[in-house]
Length: 84
Image 1 (cartoon, one colour):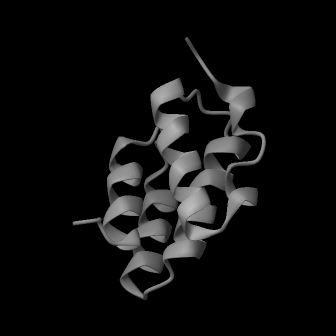
Image 2 (cartoon, helix red, strand yellow):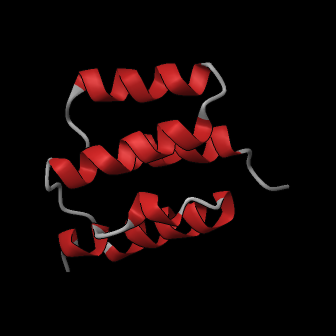
């Protein structure tokens, strides 16, 4: 069974490089109000804004969910943050 968007965003949030408790709290707040797409976009935006490094595997998960949710702009330019 496919995980819900909420569960997928939660998993990605838990595995994310985000360190700001305020951002994590904001994303969780959005999820608790059924705003999965906005929560996902917020998480991706802060990863980019804070220039946090991401692995190829993590980026692939982000891109897959963005494609599934129909929000490809959320992951735009995150490939600039790839680490090997």
